[in-house]
Length: 269
Image (tube, rainbow, N blue to C red; front, side):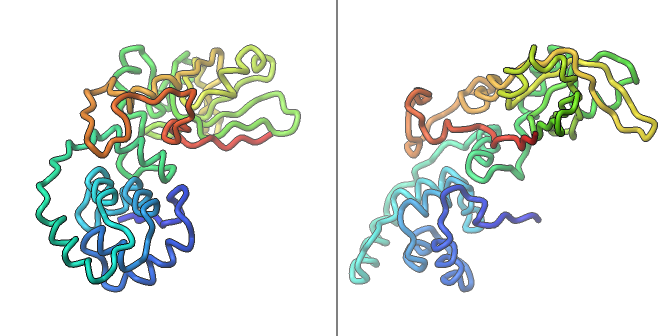
């Protein structure tokens, strides 16, 4: 089992993490108990729930967020038992299950990675219909063959004043190392610098040591496909009461959950 630390949660303060660890003891059984013992504010509870950190107490991300929003704050000890009894009598909210693709995307939005899957696996069938290979497929293609491959951009680098730009793409099967000559960079500057999901057409070349590079001829920005992971294009999305909006937010308003679908790549010059 691989466990992620609280430091991975965007916006979660160190003081909150220290308070949670100090109050943990033998563990928590429900969100309200966690809030009272650790003295966490509503924002901390929502961040924990949104990051899917409550599975150890039997709550999925959506159920945990519901519990975080209904947990009373600043209640005097005299009224804790009465409030707990009142909450216990509430009917089950029967929240719809969050689609797997949305779970993975939300992981990336909150902790910058996911242990549940890779965004590309949900787009694989669309790329296959276009004849675009996975990273593993490109790696096994014959030397000299012209192929198309796509993946999330991990790294862009152009050492010094070198004549080549190196790009690393990743999908659910592995990585592809792309080499784009500097003479072609200006032609595809926007695609190269802006794409979070990139498609590259090029020639497979292997060195004597067996290292494979895809020598780019054309570059395409396919980042728009990432939006389908959360907008219900892959499967109808059922909204629950805990969801913040009944329709996708206007990108002009800068909704925090629209800041990114994937974290930024690491770029070096």
